[in-house]
Length: 181
Image 1 (cartoon, rainbow, N blue to C red):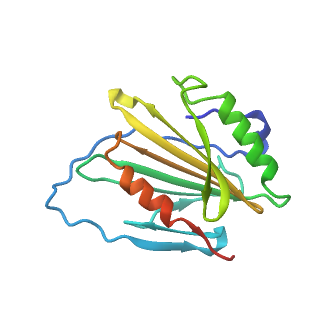
Image 2: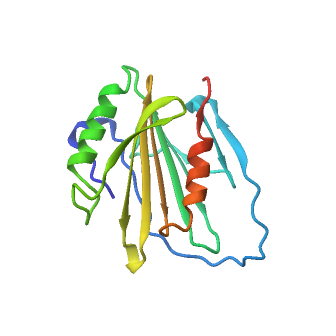
């Protein structure tokens, strides 16, 4: 779990990476059909194989978390998208979050082992990073991006066995796009 920086404690944007418990699904099982889920109140749409659970979290005052566990024979893929509107705009929050991530890597990682890269997602600048952790002695890759679009701040997190679900993560990220509120 990333520690919440002091500057966000009053408007906490905190993410939780869930410990992964592998489940086995028969390869002969029918694969779910992916479809687009649109959330105009939160300003985005995303394609997933099942509807994510949404909740208003005490960890995200005024924000929403959408999460989904996608079990497959290659290992679980844990996905969460956090979103929140900041009435004064989110550029300052984005820059502070970026600074915090660069200074405070995930537990067990060094500051230099988690490179943060500038990317373009849905036509807007964003930052992404990836690192590995070892919950319950099982190696997992964690992929995260965060982005500020006008007043809306997005944090996307995916956790999966190394290289086994990368195509699904890419498919989800590539499907993410903004929609008018």
